[in-house]
Image (cartoon, rainbow, N blue to C red):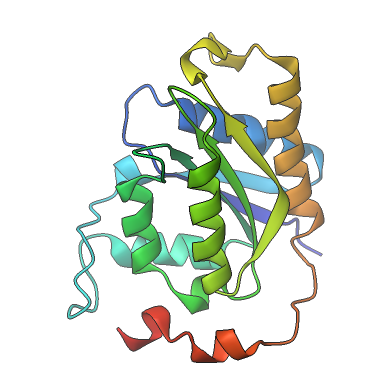
Length: 193
């Protein structure tokens, strides 16, 4: 049986991204749990704003394929105006049910200021609308610039949470999907594009 492969999608375009650093730490937990993992760095792709009238735009097919080929995902985002980044939103818009249905997803958010919970709630709603199984365990890193030193998390409790996120996404990657709900049947989402 092949190892569970986790793709950690980085919703930040910054050169020095705390989101990317945190996702890389989560992949340590993935590897400890016996999985393999990689960061999907959206800076490396030409991903135009989704135009639903177009079949493929820029590197959208490559992004969608990498997300679809993953056994599980970790979505990471900086907090912008109380929600997740437009960069991540656009990447998710290019994806759909084929990439997320029944897939286990872990969530991670970083904020320059206070607690980044609303971004996690918004991402949880989007993933649930795509019929993904979102881990109850999530990671919020507030005041993030003071949480890292030389690429490592300095707060032991937060480091543990990030590490456990990677472990849990592997542990629950093969969870059996729940029976379809009425809401799932009514949600046409990206299927109508």
